[in-house]
Image (cartoon, rainbow, N blue to C red; front, side):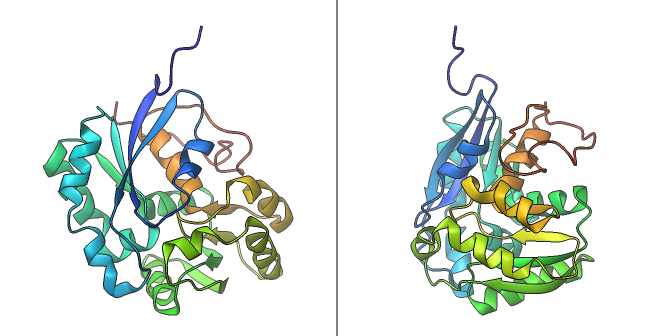
Length: 245
């Protein structure tokens, strides 16, 4: 007998309004884990618009609290690194009493678990966002040894890039002397081709939505893993972590 959707955990999902790939975390989640999405106003990928994305975060987080979620995930890699995960998490906690995490925290945790210190970077970001992200990682002991991408001005443009283009771009970075590949952005079509990219790259591949799902499961103490979305979500890099439950 089916136990129903979300019987194991409900995770609140704060996502850009212009994004087209909010389905990807749910696609990569194991049975019984439900992502409940609320969208936040975001139509441009330029750095100057990032503060506006979090302006009404408390109201949006409270909407997710109505669904009695166990954890809230703020899912925008670039915004969470620029605004800062501590500030975002504190505002959500103050508004709802519910613990939260951000995409950039998930990515950092995944990079550490997979031991990727020197990595190639693949993004759909404008140059100034790539520069900000590169500086963020360098300040934390990582080295971006090569970068490639398809700069986009809007979340809609990011979400309409065919998955095959990410595989082509990743192949172009495969000869780089690095520990692995980071594909940064929660707004791109990647789930169905992620395992293939990792197979071709022959080193670990970390991607924003993949890392977020993995990180949320670990925070909630859920040991279930998915088998079709790369080594990270297969549990190959898991280490013990105190859960929220």
